[in-house]
Image (cartoon, rainbow, N blue to C red):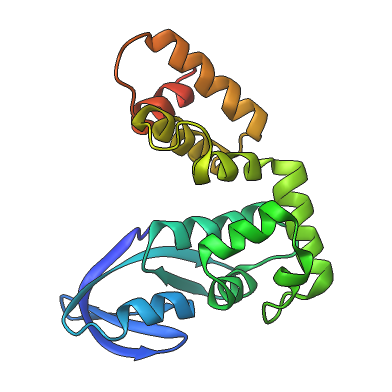
Length: 202
């Protein structure tokens, strides 16, 4: 799996970038948000990537931030009917923060205005992310709940989001993280440690 590329940006188009890494040119399909962040920067760039493999093709997708890549993968993994092209269109049509706000509010109208989404897909996004997965509760907590500036709370939120991305339901992730925090007592906790301990079974 290719996790990221670091090299010279040699070609940029609104939907793709080519990065030269030690003489090898990697073509990455990118959302407009990534293009806007990187296309104007001459010289070396770092591009986070996701390799999508099918029987017919291997396609490399690129992102300027972890938040973009995480949302891309979440849409593909957790919303039925959304593949890489539509997930990329979502990121091109709205910012990550606006997308999360619209899902939190259940604003189907705003989501359906994204090119390629439509009302039915927007409804499915809200249903499957908000009602089934439950990730929206964690987004809300991360956005500005009590203790949002507390490093311990931030670590717990990051750990819960990571576990949800790995297949946990929101309620399961919350319980596992809560139990681990209780066990840790007064020790300083980090998201990495919580995730590692959760995957080890405590």
